[in-house]
Amino acid sequence: MSRTKVAVIGSGNIGTDLMFKILRLSDSLELAALVGIDPASDGLARAARLGVVSISDGVDGLIGTDGFDDIEIVFDATSAAAHVANAAKLAPFGKRIIDLTPAAIGPYVVPPVNLGAQLDAPNINMVTCGGQATIPIVAAISRVTPVSYAEIVASIASRSAGPGTRANIDEFTETTASAIEQVGGAGRGKAIIVLNPAEPPRVMRDTVLALIGDADHERIRASVAEMVDQVSAYVPGYRLKQDVQFRALAADEPVHTLTPAGSPRATHQVSVFLEVEGAAHYLPAYAGNLDIMTSAALRVAERVAERVAAHTTDQEPAR
Image 1 (cartoon, rainbow, N blue to C red):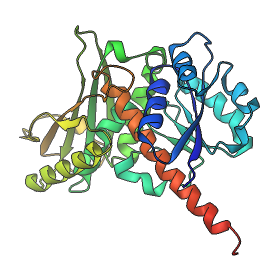
Image 2: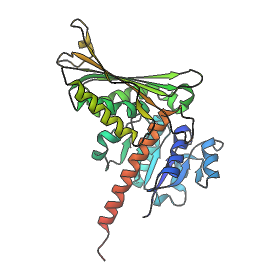
Image 3: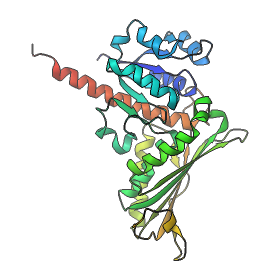
Image 4: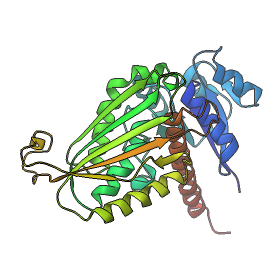
């Protein structure tokens, strides 16, 4: 079976890790090019040594390169601002774009929650690393009982946060909070990111706090466990740190300030504690934030490639 040709824009931490995942793990994708803007970047140097076409003049160079017409999917692992410009330049060529920045031009996608509904979108947004780690859990709770408010805290090693991540802190919180509501199903969402300066670096830790009414706690635990299994199928280092916790809220706790107007009063807080260890394809294992983002993007691209191949087959004339 022929592989679907893809390109990665962004030769930093995320783009380089994604390059290694495509080369090592995918049976359906062929990496046609890695694109950057710094000729001296480590990512482009590694790509050249691996025999991957390395382009150092950005998306314009990609568009002008031989073989561009054969590329079906373009990953963008740059920054939110850069993606807006890149998407505009690629739009006339009909490429499918998978956006690993918080730009959120296209619909949010979290693979185990809503991938099947967005396979035909021309621009798919992968939310954020914190969103990929926590939104499945919010969705797992909300499919059992309404979630009036969900708050997530993503703590990542400072060393794993490159210039793009640091430039997009505001977009991270806004995009993740929006996706908690739109994909996770919470009435209101909030996101916080912490760049942990600890040495040696610590793996990614994520906390999900959800406000709910009276509900079957065992059903929630089972739903969360099932979702963890689904995510760990493509992110092996994704796991629960401890059992799901429930706390009854006191009658005088002012949780109404967190929930949307008109929501039924929340009676319990659900707390879920996660850890994400990276596969160390490019950066060390502490960079689970990169691993979950690139693993999710790879999962989406492979499903999109299946969709494209099936559509192409359907369009072929009978012999």
